[in-house]
Image 1: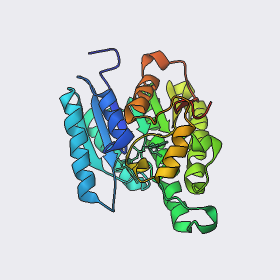
Image 2 (image 1 turned 30 degrees about the vertical axis):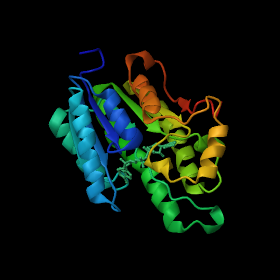
Image 3 (image 1 turned 60 degrees about the horizontal axis):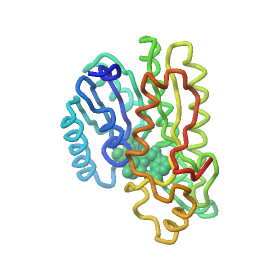
Image 4 (image 1 turned 180 degrees about the vertical axis):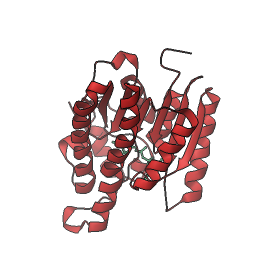
Length: 254
Ligand code: NAI
């Protein structure tokens, strides 16, 4: 066991991609990992992916549970945290990672696409932060890490909804950092650049090539590149960091 192993870690959207890598990065004997996931378009596929995350975490000796819960629905968020509390009685780390895309140029963006992205990517972290911070404030300790994006800082064509949500999430990070600092809770954000996951797998070759050309380190990032920084933000080494946005983008944004 290490100094940071005996704790309960909650990750939203842990079935795939960056969320799965985060669950793995925290997995060590003594740690209890709870994640949720949600995909109405492919419930069976998502459940299978969640089972794989659970198996990977258990391989590393940590406890793992995955639950179907939509972060945008208050009742599902409460139920999720109730289950975590029933099982372990605490929440030491919350990673607000779940996110979706509904890209379109503003001229063509549908109101439903705006609402869906703002609900999952911004309201979701607000609801989960409220639920977790209430518990952390009583504990007088806790770490919250929000998954923003470089586009929330620099903007991006075709992503008005996503960019607005990620920029909002950065604002939420700073406000939560100020509100909960006196309770021993730190709140930081990670802003990834171009990371290889299902989310970016469908990008046209031309867009991919142009994005790669804009990355000084000359490669796309892996989910593990992001997970390592999240783990750092939740470690004792980051005790004096709060309200910060760490870009994990190979230098794409400086
Ligand atoms: P992904 O599409 O591979 O995985 C998304 C995860 O979120 C899945 O586990 C899914 O079950 C979960 N999810 C989706 N909607 C949900 C909901 N309503 N409630 C609960 N869970 C839900 O995505 P990826 O690439 O791993 O992205 C993770 C986070 O990182 C997102 O917030 C994304 O915006 C952010 N990000 C990703 C980048 C990339 O290049 N892949 C770049 C910058 C930020």
